Image (cartoon, rainbow, N blue to C red; front, side, top):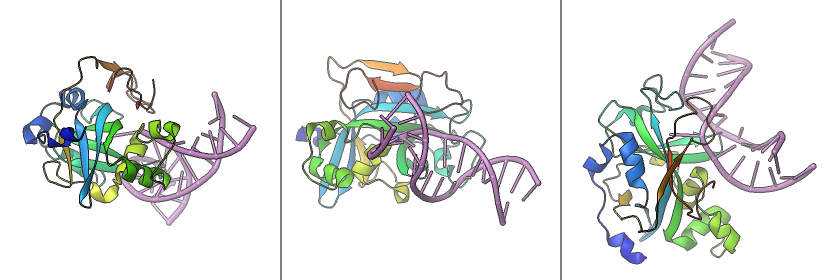
Length: 204
DNA sequence: CCACGGATTGGCT
DNA sequence: GCCAATCCGTGGA
């Protein structure tokens, strides 16, 4: 498991590809956040793509605003927003400059720094098996566990505070797609991608 | 200036 | 399964 953190950090070119390719490619990769001298890390198991050009559900649909301007920068930045006034959700900006595309990270499988995640989520280091499965199985939960907040919006993912490591999908891990969750506009698009049968998905 | 609604979660019925 | 919590970007008066 810890060997996962020795893998290579994804570079600028990875993020500059089109949003649907990046969304699918992100599955199985390791999201890492520096936490003091240690790291919090989780394998990405569920994502959603958003494209401001055609997709009315995207925050970037309708053009640049103060909230979404980072989505219009080139790929490789973090976009964090407050959902329902309660939870933070984190996105990876993709594509070339002015595209307005991003990938929402909806769920990860805990890899390292699990005690720190539990502390962030539940206020204690040791949790039940049920709580373990509930630790990072949703976009708001991932941000809470990782300690990602609004102030992290705009962070460069090729830097050393928050980044993503390359990692291959397991042999028996299959990618599936579905409609995106919790939206009403452009709801028909099958732009949610996830690793089939992974126990940390936000929904089956 | 004010009203409205949302890329969610967790607790209660 | 239903619904409140709670902030802020956006759009209309």
